[in-house]
Length: 90
Image (cartoon, rainbow, N blue to C red; front, side):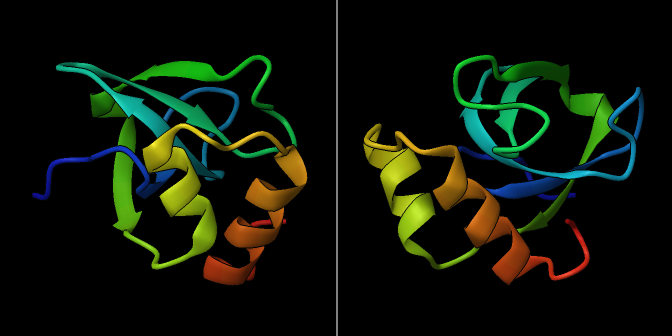
């Protein structure tokens, strides 16, 4: 199984957000901080246990580069990038 890293797209396996897709803002040893720009915005990202998510993809997009550089500021960019990567997510 691939290790989840910052900038990856993941899917939630447990909790109220089960089945939803997210971008990983930060990855620690056993947790990740995630956002989808709609339910979990940049102002209040979700911290989730790594056991409760699954890796989906590593998109090659501007939003991923902004997350990696720490310059991401708009929820709309995250929503648009997620809908491009995973058309059924919104």
